[in-house]
Amino acid sequence: MTEDDSASMVEAAGVDALVEQISGLPSDWHAAGTLGAEVILAISETLRQRGLIGRLSAETGCGKSTLLLSHLSGRHYCFAVGARDNSLERVRRSPLLRQESVEFIVGGAADKAANLGG
Image (tube, rainbow, N blue to C red; front, side):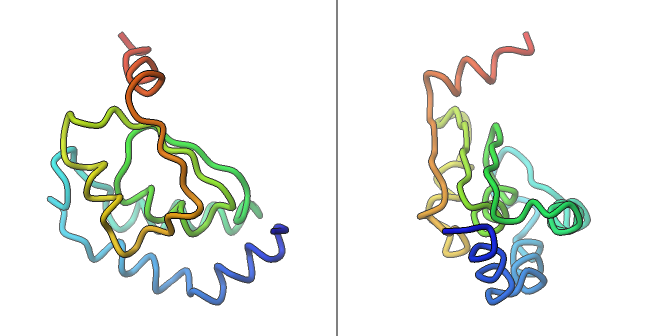
């Protein structure tokens, strides 16, 4: 899939509608805390403005940002520690997740990445 294909796919899906759906999830959607609507909108706008839709992305932790990046990224890597809270389970079960674009790296390397800050 080319960048143009990915961008067209995202446009067809409706980024604004996606942002609205994700933003509409409750603030207690998972136990680790969630991003506010303004942050989700800022992420999507920044990716659009910088021409980064359809590119590779990665994050530590998972939640609403994972749902968003699963649609806006050609391939998304999510480093998650797993059992600390219910965020990984909630994201994996969400109908808003585009599962084929996300690779979850759980435990092991994710635990080490989470502990790098001390």
